[in-house]
Length: 456
Image (cartoon, rainbow, N blue to C red):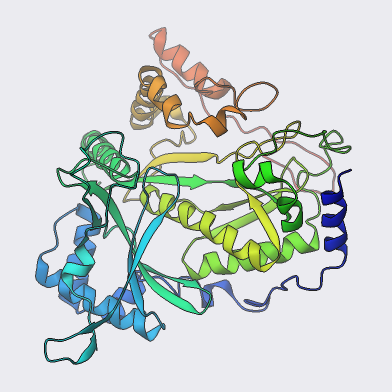
């Protein structure tokens, strides 16, 4: 064992500077502070005039444009709310092609022509900013003298207040584009795909139910991660610089005994999770699940399903929060897909679906899928889409880091497939043979003990 590792272990055993959970004790209801740092629907009702509120809601739900006057009213309301929360700056918060978020902070403070100091935030500051785009990856879209990039407000994702140390900043989710409108981020392509799927799905849905007015694309992600003491991280330059170990021996005890998954959560990790969940809830990230993962020192948290654009923003924000909270606990979060050889890597599973504004999940088979023509329509078209566009689906998750995790003895394999289960396969077989399907989703009842309820 190297001297650095001995020193790291010695530091850990003599720690007196580990943060204890300080916020949201167990007796406080999460609902009492959930979303307190978000300019959400409830906050908009409080700070916006009724006409402006309904204009913003229409823009979110139907994609209609907001005029400059309404944008000015929204900007003033955001500034008032943010300053009451202690914010002194605002930032257009965007997602360049680096895989991380970006932000440039500007103060509300300004000087009038007559030399008076005031706080100002108007429609121009809310709707558009012009950060230098030359230092961000752009895939060769522009020549070097066309360095300008533009951030533009995305009303469908709520603004929020980010607290870092003693400072508070109003963060406004935005897209990031070139002067000619080419995408320099991940959000604009996502919004384009959402718009396309929503329009196409709505046209199909109206054939079955004219009452359907809107379609929602939903996403429930799962975030896996490793949590180690920061002393171990500082003792490994390869882990610090690349996010993964490049050499060394396998751990004497890995996951061979299969005893870590869903095991009892260690107290130090549990304290970290509680603080992280509190910060998430204050920012409106609806995390609900936490547990040990398969690998040693590996964990997972997962939220409730949300609209896909908001869910994606929340995952990006979460990863930033994870690292900030870990530092308070003298821990290091490893988000690399395969930080250690010989143990499971960390995945980010995406549970994706389509729903109507009436609450119908279009990819839920129900009790009798063979008789549900609407479900079958979306079901077979989803399968066909995977078959036709498997190359694009693979490309969307093909990164150098993820390639270390795919295949071999770890799920998922480096192919794209659709597993539909025995019952749904029989439904499709009946249709292919030109027969009428009476296939029901059979519920098997498992009887255990007299004192235990039956499981369906």
